Image (cartoon, rainbow, N blue to C red; front, side):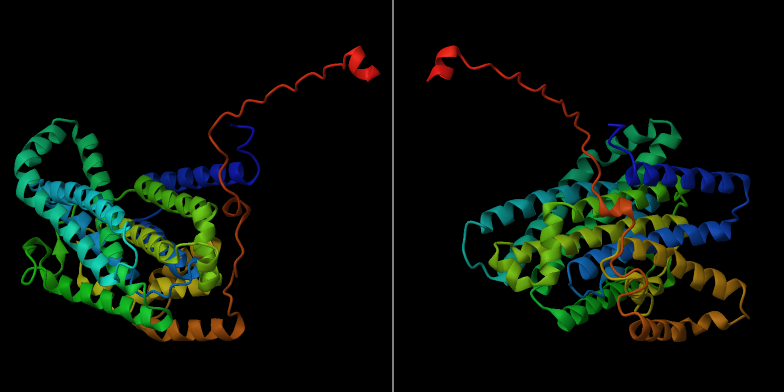
Length: 424
C-alpha cells in the first residue's frame, strides 16, 4: 500500500496534512484572527458549492443556476436540526434523517418498478417519486418521531457532551446534504429534459422560489424558529477547522474518483455529444440526474458548514445576485477543471470579502456588482477557457490506488517436453 501511495498521491496527501496542521496552529495561537478564519471557512464552503456546479456544468454540460437553492436547503435544514437539538427538541433530527432514509427507499423502489415499463412519461415519474418522498417524511413525522425521538435524545445526551455534539453535528450535515439531494432529484426529473438556456432559466427560477419560501418560513411554512425575512438566529457555532477540512477533502476526493470511474466517463460523454452518447448505449437521462444530484449534495453540505460558522442565516444570503458567485468562479477558473475551481474559489472570497472590505476605501465593496460583469467580460475576451483551462494537477488526474493487497503469483516453472514428444 505505501509503495503504491507515492508520487503525486503521496505529495498531495502530505501537503494537505501539512496545510491542515499549519492552519490549526495559526488558529490555536490566535495568529489567524476570527475575521480571516471566517474568510477561510467561507472560501472552503463556496469552493465546495462551485465544485458541485462544475460537475453539473463544466463536466456534464448542463447549464444550471440553481446551486444556491440547494445551498440554502442544506444550510437551513442542518441549522434547524441543531437549533432544536440544543433546545431539547430532537424532532428535526429524527424527521430529516429517518424521513430521508424512508424517502430514498421508497424512491428506489418506485424507480425499479417504473423501469419494468417502456416509455413512462416524465410527469408520471415525477409524481410517483414525489409521492414516495412525501410518504417517507409523513411516516417520519407521524410515527417515527413520537416513537424514538425522546429515547434517541436521552441516549445521545448520555454520552460525554463533546462526543454527543459532534455526532449531532455530523448527522445535521448529512441530513442537510441528503435533503438537498432528494429535492434536486425530484426537481431534476422534469427540468433536465430541458436544455441549454431553458435549463438555466428553470434552475434560476428554482433559486428564486427557494428564496421566497425562506422569506415566509414563519407564515407559509411551519418553521417559526427560522423567522422568515427577519433571519434565523440562535444557531450553534459548531463549525471548526477540522470539520471544514474533512468536508472539503471529502468533496474533492469523491468528485475526483467519480470523474475517473466509468460513470464519470459517461458524464463527460454527455457534455461532448449527448446524441453520440445515447447511440453507444449510455442512459443520458440517468447520467444527467446523477451529476445534478451529486453537485447539489456538495452544495447542501457546504450550506451546513456555512450555517454553523455564521450562526445566523438570512434569505438575502441566497438571493439572486449572490447565486452568480459559483458560476463566476467556475468560468474564471476554467470549465471542467477542479484545480481552477479550487484556486479561484478561495481567491474570489478573499478578493470580495478581504481585499475590497479591508484595504480599499469604505463603501468600495458595493462596487462588487460592477466587478462581476467586468471580470466575466474580460475573461470571455482574453481567455475564454478560463485561467486553468482544463488543466489539473497530477493528483487530480489520477485515481487513488486500490486498498486491496495484490498478491503476486509466482511464475509457473517451464516443464521440459518428454522424449517421445520430441521424437514425434
